[in-house]
Amino acid sequence: MSNLLEGKFALILGIANRWSLAYAIAQAFSREGATLALTYLGEHQKEAIEDLSKDLNVAAILPCDVTKDEELVALTESLRALDQPLDAVMHSLAFANREDLVRPFVETSRGGFQLAQDVSAYSLVAVARATAPLMTAGGSLSTLTYLGSTRVMPNYNVMGVAKASLEAAMRYLASDLGPQKIRVNAISAGPVKTTSARGIKDFASILDTVPERAPLRRNTDPAEVADAAVFLASDLGRGVTGNILFVDAGMQVMAY
Ligand code: IMJ
Image (tube, rainbow, N blue to C red; front, side, top):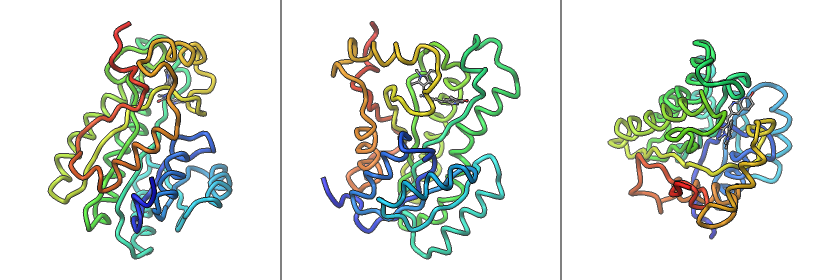
């Protein structure tokens, strides 16, 4: 594999630290020859991203809180100022209140539900609207999802509902943006030990059971998720839109 993204300009949202799937994706995009723009949330993440970007081919590091419309407008303007058409966007972010990932789903508050939907699902629509005008030669918008969108996973709760919404939004965006040659897809990754999984009750036991049951008899490697993202962003994925690509060692097919 090399140079699958040569000459392409890609925006990646959602790197928090070196364990982020978005960071594995940034590394793979860089390896394949892409130039990157990265976004961060808050000053704390800014330093972390600056550090991580040293080994990557990064043209811009930009602030972006996806819950703020004005920050998305500013993102569009900052990218426009770089004066190169955008080819790929990777949406790799989600958030729910921790309390909504530990107590029964039935206890979910209106505010907690809305927050999870806003950050984890509506943000794909907002990012699509902010970046589609920059993908003047067509492009690819990808997001990350999880099996908890269609099956009940212990504790995933409000995030499962947000991922269901995200996946549906992905399909509607694929329909809307297809005429502009912009493809929209999701990668459904198997469980990976990232900061988003840290402290989740029973996460360790989930990571222990996947290798016993998944067809490939192992867990998902972030680099495998990243290579699937490369495929979708590259011309190899040119016929694929509105799809969910499972990168989960096959776990999704199992009913036991
Ligand atoms: C998260 C919670 C419960 C079960 C889970 C997960 N499983 C997996 C995850 C089985 C794989 C990780 N995942 C796929 C997510 O989408 C996580 C989202 C998330 C995680 C946190 C933790 C810290 C916090 N808010 C969060 N919001 C979203 O405060």
